[in-house]
Image (tube, rainbow, N blue to C red; front, side, top):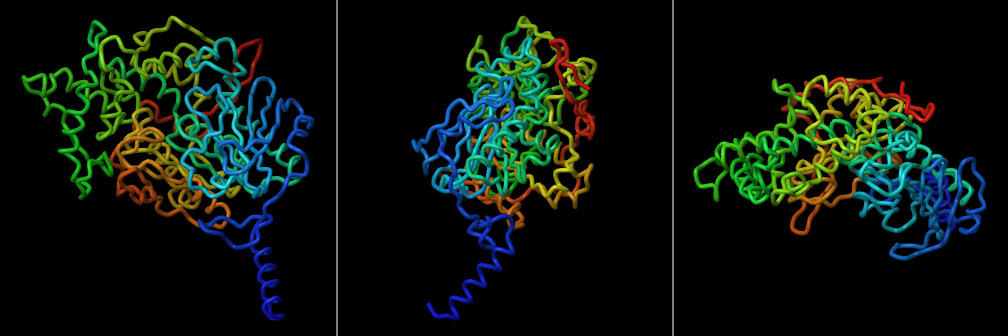
Length: 527
């Protein structure tokens, strides 16, 4: 190399170092990520078990490489009183990023899950440090863990994810003698709720957050929403009116009526809100090829969502979008006597989590009253679990970036709940302000966190990282399936919202409703 070329190369490297945050060595790499220096550990993996942190016990630390792109130190530990955490710390070169992943359902297990991040380079090449937690309880996902265990409720609500972030960063600093240059959170379903809870309550924990199909309004979702899925489909004798064998018939009719509204006949509705399908068109005397009037009425109720006897909405206007009918097996059984997911999740929540300091293992779905008074009592006593505060000003001021995403055909958590939250953010903070730090993506035909008829595999984590690290604003995200792909642009409302959000839970989507809880004399006290 000539003397001139050598000097030029050195100057370019120095300039790049000055331009990038932390220890970056170039303006950006492929995908818009900062080119961060790889760092090696300064201690052995096994020695992490000797690290002393207040309230923390590292129970095991071993090097493994099984089913991973690169070797890593697998760490397991506990955070007092009962949060289990697991970590993966690269042993051949850590690129200074920390990723914490969420868990779904009512949690109870700690397994790192790279939700919709398979194409993310630091994940794919094994150079990212990762962690997750079981959120303060182990085992059963039926809610019974919450009975007489108020601290576990606090950990599940919000504390478990936060203390895991704190401890994981301390262990990373000990292992590499360097703190993360950037920290991220990625989760779907309850993991999406955990993601939003972090942005709302602990805005300094993470620089970038990807929140997928968030169970943000977990109280309404796991009570009135899922109980309605079951009860709206039962007659006076508790027998199911609509069974799953009718779902293909209903779906085919929806596709015939609405598929071409987006200009492409592909069996997928780009925006189901444009569809004005009437289940009554399927009523005819031939019950083998049509619906009865009672079955058509059930279809309408399942689409529209829970109401009281006067038609007042107890959840957002659309509970299940048209086009998602094939996945309604989540709550429409194959035969009489079957117990559906909706019944299980509603009972788990109503028996042990919905009413503060009350455990009632004998509670039945029919005990839930679909009235405004019942609604208010339910959300009042358990709203500390919800993550619907729309004011993310502290997160934005700290430079945080948020990507929300949801499948239009989600059969478990209505995309309207996420749209409601996004709408509340824009009304609270202003649309232009929200656009500086948040994006929403809605994936046509995609079911809950994956699956469905539409393209359902994509990388949402890289756009978050690129926005944080190099200021690269997210554009379209390409989603693929075995047979097709499509570029999904950031959501932009077309004029006035097609669906309004005037319902019994409107006040939940305001700033200041969240409570902080503590244990007093064995009881949960929130204020």
